[in-house]
Image (tube, rainbow, N blue to C red; front, side, top):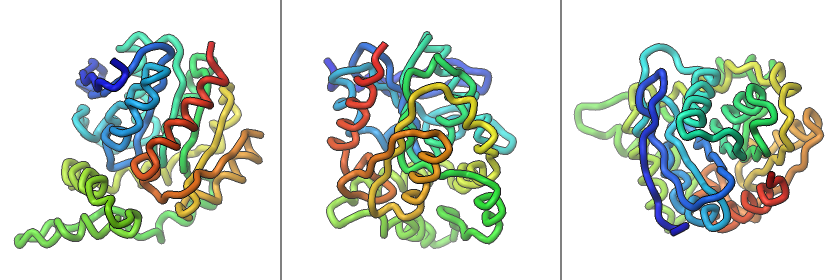
Length: 266
């Protein structure tokens, strides 16, 4: 059944990579932001799975996937995606990435060429020299220092509370679980983004690209015009939502993904 979530592990050079999937047909691989896990797409998977084989993986170093030592990088995250695709026998697939996952998707699409049938970049940062130069002055997004009285647990919650509306506490709770799972390295995904030399990789992308963003996500919204200029790609704005748009608007998000993939079926 399309709405049944199947979970599994696939071997990789880093160790076991965890993934969840729904449905059948052409594969659509969804990459989450950091420090999240596949649960960012928990409500999206069954919806995309009505028409396609929807797969959401835990990025290397996050969720239930292997957590290798050494510095994270977009390139290493992409190594994990490529290893999962190979492990699952995905000769060709469509690729969706949200926030950090979008940056990883850029690298994967640049590497794999025609193996990626289409690319959807959701709220993806456009990383150029100006972005990298500004990184040292950027305050931490998710980092907290553990306290003996546990007060840092509330701080983790409050780090992203403003991104969620009243009634969305269950989604915020999932974020807290994911952040606590990697608390000592919670900021490294963001740091990897700001080190990435994206502008050198864009010319290698051959897949058709759609860049989308939620209107309240002021961190990423300006990147739509930059991706359009650099790639000549289409852009679209969701009807609402903030940084956690896939959890806030799962139906609309899934519809955008499904329509885009349907346009580029093989």
